[in-house]
Image (cartoon, rainbow, N blue to C red):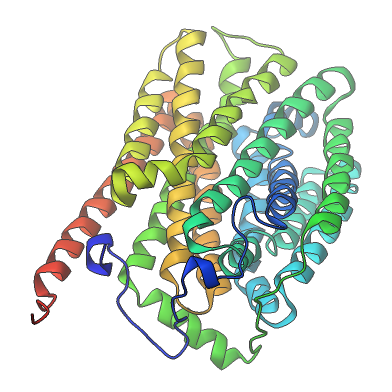
Length: 428
Protein backbone atom coordinates (compact mmCIF):
# COMPACT_ATOMS: atom_id res chain seq x y z
CA UNK A 1 0.00 0.00 0.00
CA UNK A 2 1.49 3.29 -1.07
CA UNK A 3 1.66 6.34 1.20
CA UNK A 4 -1.13 8.09 -0.57
CA UNK A 5 -3.53 5.23 0.07
CA UNK A 6 -2.93 5.38 3.78
CA UNK A 7 -2.82 9.13 4.11
CA UNK A 8 0.80 8.95 5.26
CA UNK A 9 3.28 11.65 4.58
CA UNK A 10 5.42 11.09 1.46
CA UNK A 11 8.22 13.44 2.54
CA UNK A 12 11.64 11.86 2.64
CA UNK A 13 14.50 13.63 4.35
CA UNK A 14 18.00 12.95 5.51
CA UNK A 15 16.66 11.44 8.70
CA UNK A 16 14.40 8.91 6.95
CA UNK A 17 15.47 5.39 7.92
CA UNK A 18 16.38 2.96 5.18
CA UNK A 19 13.88 0.08 5.08
CA UNK A 20 15.26 -3.24 6.17
CA UNK A 21 13.98 -6.74 5.69
CA UNK A 22 12.69 -8.60 8.74
CA UNK A 23 15.47 -11.16 8.46
CA UNK A 24 18.13 -8.45 8.83
CA UNK A 25 16.24 -6.43 11.43
CA UNK A 26 17.76 -6.70 14.91
CA UNK A 27 14.82 -5.00 16.59
CA UNK A 28 12.50 -6.90 18.92
CA UNK A 29 9.53 -8.91 17.66
CA UNK A 30 6.95 -11.16 19.33
CA UNK A 31 8.62 -14.36 20.46
CA UNK A 32 12.08 -12.84 20.17
CA UNK A 33 14.61 -12.12 22.92
CA UNK A 34 13.54 -9.42 25.37
CA UNK A 35 10.12 -8.80 23.81
CA UNK A 36 8.12 -10.19 26.71
CA UNK A 37 10.21 -8.36 29.30
CA UNK A 38 9.88 -5.14 27.35
CA UNK A 39 6.11 -5.58 26.91
CA UNK A 40 5.54 -6.33 30.60
CA UNK A 41 7.78 -3.46 31.72
CA UNK A 42 5.95 -0.91 29.59
CA UNK A 43 2.62 -2.46 30.57
CA UNK A 44 3.53 -1.76 34.22
CA UNK A 45 4.61 1.77 33.32
CA UNK A 46 1.20 2.28 31.71
CA UNK A 47 -0.51 0.92 34.83
CA UNK A 48 1.42 3.32 37.09
CA UNK A 49 0.86 6.31 34.77
CA UNK A 50 -2.93 6.06 34.57
CA UNK A 51 -3.38 4.92 38.17
CA UNK A 52 -1.53 8.02 39.41
CA UNK A 53 -2.86 10.43 36.81
CA UNK A 54 -6.52 9.67 37.55
CA UNK A 55 -6.21 8.65 41.21
CA UNK A 56 -8.68 11.33 42.36
CA UNK A 57 -11.25 10.93 39.58
CA UNK A 58 -13.46 8.30 41.26
CA UNK A 59 -13.14 10.20 44.56
CA UNK A 60 -14.42 13.58 43.41
CA UNK A 61 -17.73 13.43 45.33
CA UNK A 62 -15.78 12.73 48.55
CA UNK A 63 -13.28 15.51 47.83
CA UNK A 64 -16.16 17.89 47.12
CA UNK A 65 -17.69 16.95 50.45
CA UNK A 66 -14.54 17.36 52.53
CA UNK A 67 -13.48 20.70 51.08
CA UNK A 68 -16.98 22.06 50.43
CA UNK A 69 -16.51 22.66 46.71
CA UNK A 70 -18.68 21.98 43.64
CA UNK A 71 -18.01 19.36 40.95
CA UNK A 72 -16.36 21.88 38.62
CA UNK A 73 -13.82 22.96 41.25
CA UNK A 74 -13.11 19.42 42.42
CA UNK A 75 -12.57 18.34 38.80
CA UNK A 76 -9.42 20.50 38.77
CA UNK A 77 -7.68 17.76 40.78
CA UNK A 78 -7.92 15.75 37.55
CA UNK A 79 -7.57 18.59 35.05
CA UNK A 80 -4.44 19.97 36.78
CA UNK A 81 -2.70 16.60 36.50
CA UNK A 82 -3.56 16.09 32.84
CA UNK A 83 -2.83 19.76 32.10
CA UNK A 84 0.59 19.49 33.75
CA UNK A 85 1.34 16.46 31.61
CA UNK A 86 0.19 18.22 28.44
CA UNK A 87 2.36 21.26 29.22
CA UNK A 88 5.55 19.33 29.97
CA UNK A 89 5.36 16.40 27.59
CA UNK A 90 7.23 18.22 24.80
CA UNK A 91 10.17 19.40 26.98
CA UNK A 92 10.40 15.92 28.51
CA UNK A 93 10.47 14.36 25.06
CA UNK A 94 13.41 16.61 24.19
CA UNK A 95 15.24 15.35 27.27
CA UNK A 96 14.57 11.78 26.17
CA UNK A 97 16.12 12.55 22.78
CA UNK A 98 19.29 13.65 24.54
CA UNK A 99 19.54 11.40 27.59
CA UNK A 100 17.66 8.30 26.46
CA UNK A 101 14.12 6.96 26.70
CA UNK A 102 14.73 4.57 29.60
CA UNK A 103 16.53 7.19 31.70
CA UNK A 104 13.76 9.77 31.32
CA UNK A 105 10.98 7.25 31.93
CA UNK A 106 12.69 6.02 35.10
CA UNK A 107 13.23 9.55 36.46
CA UNK A 108 9.66 10.55 35.62
CA UNK A 109 8.16 7.59 37.45
CA UNK A 110 10.42 8.17 40.46
CA UNK A 111 9.30 11.79 40.87
CA UNK A 112 5.63 11.00 40.18
CA UNK A 113 5.43 8.23 42.78
CA UNK A 114 7.23 10.46 45.29
CA UNK A 115 4.62 13.17 44.84
CA UNK A 116 1.93 10.49 44.96
CA UNK A 117 2.96 9.66 48.51
CA UNK A 118 2.52 13.34 49.46
CA UNK A 119 -0.94 13.81 47.92
CA UNK A 120 -2.85 12.22 50.86
CA UNK A 121 -1.53 14.95 53.16
CA UNK A 122 -2.82 17.92 51.12
CA UNK A 123 -4.35 20.40 53.63
CA UNK A 124 -6.64 22.21 51.17
CA UNK A 125 -8.17 21.91 47.72
CA UNK A 126 -5.62 24.43 46.43
CA UNK A 127 -2.67 22.43 47.75
CA UNK A 128 -4.17 19.25 46.32
CA UNK A 129 -4.50 20.83 42.88
CA UNK A 130 -0.88 22.05 42.98
CA UNK A 131 0.44 18.62 43.98
CA UNK A 132 -1.57 17.00 41.22
CA UNK A 133 -0.20 19.47 38.67
CA UNK A 134 3.36 18.63 39.72
CA UNK A 135 2.56 14.93 39.52
CA UNK A 136 1.17 15.33 36.01
CA UNK A 137 4.25 17.28 34.91
CA UNK A 138 6.48 14.49 36.23
CA UNK A 139 4.47 11.83 34.40
CA UNK A 140 5.01 13.73 31.14
CA UNK A 141 8.25 11.81 30.63
CA UNK A 142 6.40 8.51 30.19
CA UNK A 143 3.97 8.53 27.24
CA UNK A 144 6.08 10.11 24.49
CA UNK A 145 9.28 8.37 25.58
CA UNK A 146 7.52 4.99 25.69
CA UNK A 147 6.12 5.23 22.16
CA UNK A 148 9.47 6.52 20.85
CA UNK A 149 11.26 3.63 22.59
CA UNK A 150 8.88 1.16 20.93
CA UNK A 151 9.27 2.80 17.50
CA UNK A 152 13.07 2.40 17.80
CA UNK A 153 13.28 -1.01 19.44
CA UNK A 154 10.36 -2.95 17.92
CA UNK A 155 9.96 -4.08 14.30
CA UNK A 156 7.41 -2.05 12.32
CA UNK A 157 5.02 -4.98 11.78
CA UNK A 158 4.74 -5.46 15.54
CA UNK A 159 4.53 -1.76 16.45
CA UNK A 160 0.74 -1.36 16.62
CA UNK A 161 0.47 -4.46 18.81
CA UNK A 162 3.30 -3.30 21.09
CA UNK A 163 1.81 0.17 21.52
CA UNK A 164 -1.58 -1.45 22.04
CA UNK A 165 -0.14 -3.39 24.99
CA UNK A 166 1.21 -0.16 26.49
CA UNK A 167 -2.21 1.45 26.06
CA UNK A 168 -3.74 -1.67 27.59
CA UNK A 169 -1.55 -0.99 30.63
CA UNK A 170 -3.10 2.48 30.74
CA UNK A 171 -6.55 0.93 30.86
CA UNK A 172 -5.60 -1.53 33.61
CA UNK A 173 -4.05 1.31 35.62
CA UNK A 174 -7.10 3.48 35.17
CA UNK A 175 -9.41 0.65 36.13
CA UNK A 176 -7.47 -0.69 39.11
CA UNK A 177 -6.81 2.80 40.45
CA UNK A 178 -10.48 3.69 40.43
CA UNK A 179 -11.71 0.34 41.76
CA UNK A 180 -9.15 0.26 44.57
CA UNK A 181 -9.74 3.87 45.56
CA UNK A 182 -13.50 3.34 45.54
CA UNK A 183 -13.47 0.48 48.03
CA UNK A 184 -10.62 1.82 50.18
CA UNK A 185 -12.27 5.26 50.35
CA UNK A 186 -15.57 3.73 51.42
CA UNK A 187 -13.85 2.25 54.49
CA UNK A 188 -11.05 4.71 55.29
CA UNK A 189 -11.59 7.87 53.23
CA UNK A 190 -10.12 9.34 50.09
CA UNK A 191 -6.72 10.17 51.61
CA UNK A 192 -5.93 6.55 52.45
CA UNK A 193 -7.22 5.57 48.99
CA UNK A 194 -4.81 7.81 47.06
CA UNK A 195 -2.00 6.73 49.39
CA UNK A 196 -2.67 3.10 48.46
CA UNK A 197 -2.36 4.01 44.78
CA UNK A 198 0.99 5.67 45.54
CA UNK A 199 2.32 2.46 47.12
CA UNK A 200 1.14 0.35 44.15
CA UNK A 201 2.82 2.80 41.76
CA UNK A 202 6.12 2.44 43.66
CA UNK A 203 6.03 -1.32 43.08
CA UNK A 204 5.26 -0.83 39.36
CA UNK A 205 8.10 1.68 39.00
CA UNK A 206 10.67 -0.65 40.57
CA UNK A 207 9.58 -3.61 38.43
CA UNK A 208 9.61 -1.43 35.30
CA UNK A 209 13.22 -0.37 35.84
CA UNK A 210 14.36 -3.93 36.52
CA UNK A 211 12.61 -5.43 33.50
CA UNK A 212 12.98 -2.91 30.66
CA UNK A 213 15.81 -3.94 28.29
CA UNK A 214 18.52 -1.38 27.61
CA UNK A 215 17.91 0.40 24.28
CA UNK A 216 20.00 -0.84 21.36
CA UNK A 217 18.87 1.50 18.60
CA UNK A 218 18.74 4.87 20.35
CA UNK A 219 20.88 7.70 18.95
CA UNK A 220 21.24 10.79 21.13
CA UNK A 221 19.91 14.01 19.64
CA UNK A 222 20.44 17.67 20.34
CA UNK A 223 18.96 19.81 23.11
CA UNK A 224 19.41 23.01 21.12
CA UNK A 225 16.11 24.96 21.07
CA UNK A 226 16.47 25.67 17.37
CA UNK A 227 16.69 21.97 16.54
CA UNK A 228 13.71 21.18 18.76
CA UNK A 229 11.59 23.96 17.26
CA UNK A 230 12.54 22.86 13.75
CA UNK A 231 11.44 19.29 14.50
CA UNK A 232 8.17 20.50 16.01
CA UNK A 233 7.57 22.73 13.00
CA UNK A 234 8.15 19.75 10.67
CA UNK A 235 5.60 17.65 12.52
CA UNK A 236 2.99 20.39 12.71
CA UNK A 237 3.36 21.04 8.97
CA UNK A 238 2.39 17.44 8.21
CA UNK A 239 -1.39 17.33 7.56
CA UNK A 240 -1.70 13.68 8.62
CA UNK A 241 0.00 14.29 11.96
CA UNK A 242 -2.19 17.33 12.59
CA UNK A 243 -5.29 15.20 11.98
CA UNK A 244 -4.04 12.47 14.30
CA UNK A 245 -3.32 15.01 17.05
CA UNK A 246 -6.84 16.41 16.77
CA UNK A 247 -8.38 12.93 16.80
CA UNK A 248 -6.49 12.01 19.97
CA UNK A 249 -7.62 15.22 21.67
CA UNK A 250 -11.27 14.71 20.72
CA UNK A 251 -11.39 11.07 21.82
CA UNK A 252 -9.91 12.07 25.17
CA UNK A 253 -12.41 14.93 25.52
CA UNK A 254 -15.17 12.32 25.52
CA UNK A 255 -13.38 10.01 27.92
CA UNK A 256 -12.29 12.74 30.33
CA UNK A 257 -15.76 14.24 30.53
CA UNK A 258 -17.59 10.97 31.02
CA UNK A 259 -15.35 9.52 33.71
CA UNK A 260 -14.97 12.77 35.61
CA UNK A 261 -18.73 13.17 35.98
CA UNK A 262 -19.99 9.58 36.18
CA UNK A 263 -19.32 9.36 39.93
CA UNK A 264 -21.55 12.37 40.59
CA UNK A 265 -24.33 10.94 38.44
CA UNK A 266 -24.28 7.54 40.14
CA UNK A 267 -24.37 9.02 43.64
CA UNK A 268 -27.62 10.83 42.75
CA UNK A 269 -31.13 9.44 42.27
CA UNK A 270 -32.28 7.17 40.72
CA UNK A 271 -29.06 5.22 41.32
CA UNK A 272 -27.78 6.45 44.73
CA UNK A 273 -24.86 4.01 44.72
CA UNK A 274 -22.22 3.83 47.51
CA UNK A 275 -18.61 4.79 46.77
CA UNK A 276 -17.33 1.20 46.64
CA UNK A 277 -19.87 0.17 44.02
CA UNK A 278 -19.13 3.28 41.97
CA UNK A 279 -15.43 2.41 42.03
CA UNK A 280 -16.21 -1.15 40.87
CA UNK A 281 -17.99 0.21 37.81
CA UNK A 282 -14.56 1.12 36.48
CA UNK A 283 -14.01 -2.60 35.89
CA UNK A 284 -15.35 -1.79 32.43
CA UNK A 285 -11.78 -0.62 31.74
CA UNK A 286 -11.03 -4.28 31.09
CA UNK A 287 -12.93 -3.80 27.85
CA UNK A 288 -10.44 -1.07 26.96
CA UNK A 289 -7.56 -3.46 27.67
CA UNK A 290 -8.95 -5.87 25.10
CA UNK A 291 -9.85 -3.25 22.47
CA UNK A 292 -6.45 -1.53 22.72
CA UNK A 293 -4.46 -4.77 22.51
CA UNK A 294 -6.41 -5.90 19.42
CA UNK A 295 -6.13 -2.56 17.60
CA UNK A 296 -3.44 -3.97 15.30
CA UNK A 297 -5.76 -6.66 13.97
CA UNK A 298 -8.55 -4.12 13.61
CA UNK A 299 -6.34 -1.90 11.43
CA UNK A 300 -5.28 -4.96 9.42
CA UNK A 301 -8.90 -5.74 8.56
CA UNK A 302 -10.45 -2.30 8.18
CA UNK A 303 -7.51 0.02 7.55
CA UNK A 304 -6.68 2.92 9.83
CA UNK A 305 -9.60 5.10 8.83
CA UNK A 306 -12.07 2.22 8.98
CA UNK A 307 -10.87 1.44 12.49
CA UNK A 308 -11.34 5.09 13.50
CA UNK A 309 -14.88 5.15 12.10
CA UNK A 310 -15.71 2.02 14.07
CA UNK A 311 -14.16 3.43 17.24
CA UNK A 312 -16.06 6.71 16.86
CA UNK A 313 -19.37 4.98 16.14
CA UNK A 314 -18.95 2.67 19.13
CA UNK A 315 -18.21 5.63 21.39
CA UNK A 316 -21.24 7.59 20.14
CA UNK A 317 -23.55 4.60 20.64
CA UNK A 318 -22.29 4.28 24.21
CA UNK A 319 -22.92 7.94 24.93
CA UNK A 320 -26.52 7.72 23.75
CA UNK A 321 -27.18 4.52 25.72
CA UNK A 322 -25.83 6.13 28.89
CA UNK A 323 -28.72 8.62 28.84
CA UNK A 324 -31.09 5.93 30.13
CA UNK A 325 -32.14 5.85 33.77
CA UNK A 326 -31.49 2.11 33.81
CA UNK A 327 -28.24 1.01 35.48
CA UNK A 328 -27.67 -1.95 33.08
CA UNK A 329 -28.01 0.39 30.08
CA UNK A 330 -25.70 2.96 31.64
CA UNK A 331 -23.12 0.21 32.24
CA UNK A 332 -23.47 -1.01 28.65
CA UNK A 333 -23.00 2.57 27.50
CA UNK A 334 -19.79 2.85 29.55
CA UNK A 335 -18.55 -0.43 28.04
CA UNK A 336 -19.05 0.90 24.50
CA UNK A 337 -17.51 4.30 25.31
CA UNK A 338 -14.46 2.62 26.85
CA UNK A 339 -14.00 0.13 24.00
CA UNK A 340 -14.32 2.85 21.36
CA UNK A 341 -12.00 5.25 23.13
CA UNK A 342 -9.14 2.83 23.75
CA UNK A 343 -9.32 1.40 20.23
CA UNK A 344 -9.29 4.88 18.70
CA UNK A 345 -6.43 6.00 20.93
CA UNK A 346 -4.29 2.94 20.11
CA UNK A 347 -4.90 3.37 16.37
CA UNK A 348 -4.13 7.11 16.35
CA UNK A 349 -1.05 6.96 18.60
CA UNK A 350 0.53 4.08 16.65
CA UNK A 351 -0.14 5.94 13.38
CA UNK A 352 1.82 8.91 14.75
CA UNK A 353 4.83 6.69 15.47
CA UNK A 354 4.67 5.17 12.00
CA UNK A 355 4.24 8.49 10.19
CA UNK A 356 7.09 10.40 11.84
CA UNK A 357 10.38 9.69 10.07
CA UNK A 358 12.51 11.67 12.55
CA UNK A 359 12.06 13.24 15.96
CA UNK A 360 9.69 10.47 16.96
CA UNK A 361 9.73 11.52 20.62
CA UNK A 362 8.59 15.02 19.63
CA UNK A 363 5.94 13.61 17.28
CA UNK A 364 4.62 11.41 20.08
CA UNK A 365 4.92 14.28 22.56
CA UNK A 366 2.76 16.53 20.41
CA UNK A 367 0.16 13.77 20.22
CA UNK A 368 0.28 13.24 23.98
CA UNK A 369 0.05 16.98 24.57
CA UNK A 370 -3.07 17.23 22.41
CA UNK A 371 -4.45 14.08 24.02
CA UNK A 372 -4.10 15.39 27.57
CA UNK A 373 -5.30 18.86 26.62
CA UNK A 374 -8.39 16.99 25.47
CA UNK A 375 -8.56 15.26 28.86
CA UNK A 376 -8.34 18.54 30.75
CA UNK A 377 -10.88 20.18 28.45
CA UNK A 378 -13.20 17.19 28.72
CA UNK A 379 -12.97 17.07 32.52
CA UNK A 380 -13.76 20.77 32.86
CA UNK A 381 -16.36 20.98 30.08
CA UNK A 382 -18.04 17.75 31.16
CA UNK A 383 -18.32 18.89 34.79
CA UNK A 384 -19.54 22.36 33.78
CA UNK A 385 -22.11 20.87 31.40
CA UNK A 386 -23.27 18.48 34.13
CA UNK A 387 -23.77 21.38 36.52
CA UNK A 388 -25.75 23.29 33.89
CA UNK A 389 -27.79 20.51 32.26
CA UNK A 390 -27.24 17.25 34.07
CA UNK A 391 -25.89 14.11 32.44
CA UNK A 392 -27.44 15.07 29.09
CA UNK A 393 -25.11 18.09 29.03
CA UNK A 394 -22.06 15.88 29.52
CA UNK A 395 -23.26 13.53 26.78
CA UNK A 396 -23.73 16.47 24.41
CA UNK A 397 -20.09 17.48 24.92
CA UNK A 398 -19.05 13.90 24.10
CA UNK A 399 -21.23 13.60 20.99
CA UNK A 400 -19.85 16.85 19.57
CA UNK A 401 -16.31 15.53 20.09
CA UNK A 402 -17.14 12.28 18.27
CA UNK A 403 -18.62 14.25 15.38
CA UNK A 404 -15.28 16.06 15.24
CA UNK A 405 -13.41 12.72 15.01
CA UNK A 406 -15.59 11.52 12.15
CA UNK A 407 -15.32 14.83 10.30
CA UNK A 408 -11.53 14.87 10.52
CA UNK A 409 -11.34 11.25 9.36
CA UNK A 410 -13.57 12.00 6.36
CA UNK A 411 -11.35 14.96 5.43
CA UNK A 412 -8.32 12.68 5.69
CA UNK A 413 -9.94 10.17 3.34
CA UNK A 414 -10.62 12.93 0.78
CA UNK A 415 -7.05 14.22 1.07
CA UNK A 416 -5.70 10.70 0.48
CA UNK A 417 -7.84 10.26 -2.64
CA UNK A 418 -6.68 13.61 -4.03
CA UNK A 419 -3.05 12.68 -3.36
CA UNK A 420 -3.56 9.30 -5.07
CA UNK A 421 -4.94 10.93 -8.22
CA UNK A 422 -1.97 13.29 -8.36
CA UNK A 423 0.60 10.51 -7.93
CA UNK A 424 2.40 9.93 -11.25
CA UNK A 425 1.86 6.56 -12.92
CA UNK A 426 5.23 4.70 -13.15
CA UNK A 427 6.54 4.06 -16.64
CA UNK A 428 6.56 0.44 -17.86
